Image (cartoon, rainbow, N blue to C red):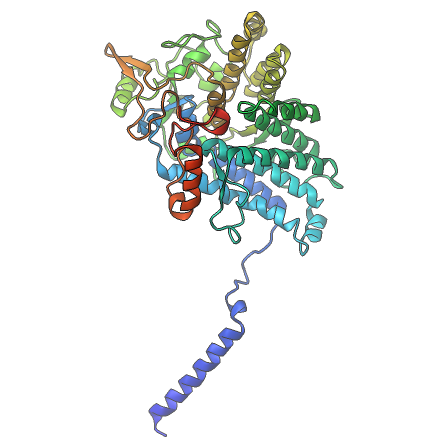
Length: 523
């Protein structure tokens, strides 16, 4: 046998052995022995909450979306988003990443329901139902955020990509009903838990299940109150949530605390402004005049003549400063900015509390609960006053001699029911600074405050000429502010049939298409 032939036979034999071995041990060879298949559920909870606290409240997912749509902020550079030309990459990322971040929560639920792991995880981290309930409460917060942003969303088939790689879109009402049911179930689970909460990793409440129960009920109250805009029968659910026990003080607030400069400890707006150098935002003229106690354009301030004690806290100024007129072009915005250099608000120059590295992210808080209870109980004065006082406390604002609160309550007690509604919702809006998702949702639900600029309104007067707010071509919102965000472009590639069905069911995929609790239909 010649040498060449011997080599061919040897190589063939080695290949046969190799292929046989690969076939026999394929699963072992293709398994990374260093990959983690399980982990500490306490750490998963921490990571999930931190992901939402940082990303959903940063200068992109909040700053260039709800912070602008609520008109608490405007951009002083690149103002296209102020006119509703939102960047598709931002919207796509917001939609996609919130589902990704929820996978940690879903894994907590899976590990505590799987017969192969549930006993071990109960022994390590506490009662299975306790862990499941806490994960479901945080998921409910996220799902409400998503459906309030977009309308119909994947819910019942979400978070199980192996089984549902292209999940159906559930109606907004179905999502709301599902979340309310989950929160009721979570409350019961926590009340019947055989152990305390997470010993570590609970960055909201340090394992105090009584506070988690109040958070669940407060979130259920928020869902039910918002849904009652479409169906008043949900007010019964809101009343039940209050009776079951909602937040009772600022000690019950669901807040993620950042600590200091440096990843992952720094607050998101500090990261955007200081680390990223994105000095793009300032308060709007409407918001500034509102908290200074002035009228603005055609807006009549219900708190006319009352300087808000939160004004110096929000801005770090004590003197009168101007906010940026909302929704102008880049050219006009720069002209206004340079022409008002001595009188404008500059966050970057003053470094106020909201861009400090330790500024916390609030998911839901007691002042908001007070305003909601006031509404459910027929614009109750005591709860309204408690909401204002609690807000001032939370923000560290000083109401010298109680003069601000006293005067507001004098006006409130003399007002009509509609006037009381305007005062409650406007105070809630002022309080919800840095909770822009809620500020925007509450405006859409109620139409208050009246300080927001609508399409066709005069937003500024420059060089003697009126500047009219006009949404960008193709991004029109009808007669009011943007009513929802368009579905991500990626969904029309990855889940085309289902997203198209959702858009058709709602009416159309546009900024003028109202969500379910806002009345539906086109505005």
